[in-house]
Image (cartoon, rainbow, N blue to C red):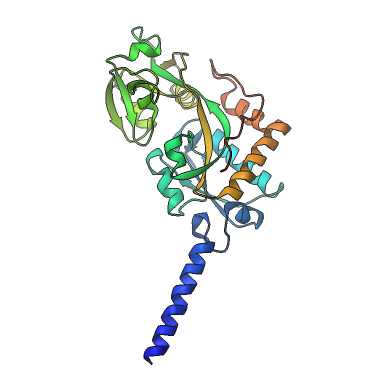
Amino acid sequence: MHKRRIGVAGSVAALAVGLAACGGGGGDASYSTVVDKVTGASEIVVGTKWDQPSLGLKTGNEPEGYDVDMAKAVIKEMAGGKDVKISWKEAPSKNREALLQNGTVDIIFATYSITDERKGKVSFGGPYIIARQDTMVRADDSAIMKATDLKDKRICQAAGSNSYKRITDPPPDGKLGLSAKLVGASNYSECVQKLSGSNLDAVTTDDLILAGFAKQAGGNFKILGDPFTEEKYGIGLKKGDTKTCEAVNKAVAALYQKGEAQQLWQKWFGQAKGLTAPTAAPPAEGCA
């Protein structure tokens, strides 16, 4: 009986190891990579923002916005034009790496700037668009006219975002090295609430994020139009999923060649002031 118990235990352990080795994102052990799930017509779990107007905003059953539409288009392109069922999960900035690492989501489209630090934790496809960090203030503010005016001003520190570091950290890691005062917030929608309530002097982050909030606010805010970084929006994948990375890069290139990616940008940002419409796919970062 003792030998039999050891044999059963060993078999169970071996099975568990085998399933873990085969497991892809979303907790589905039947597929080894996300692209295998897509081509196999399995349901895909996509992480995106639920609180960012024009990018990822959830007001009904599903989120909507540019990131959401790009996710749908890239997945359909990977599937050879076939529709794939998508389940949406909220992916706040502070949780994006964990959601991929623990398999809660398969793939993330969520204003996810590619950085060397993040590359150590996840793999990135793309970028599919390049944003630029800018600054948004109240419409009646005449004291802040350019980014360097943020010295000693109250700026928002959104959890999980690196945007504030571009202001406060000295070069080369930062950009401006200013002694700004940081005001914490759980996300950028809370940052905007604080700005509206005069608890902040400015919100500084990617121009696409700011454009969505400015449009939603209907003239209460203005964007300075003084960008000072390039933010490469990547497609977040579980670390090491090179096969899917290569597939999404091919899909992004195809969507730009067909003009579909440009049409999606125009749909969500075509009326925004100060933004430059993309004409071609940004150079891929590579999947090594």
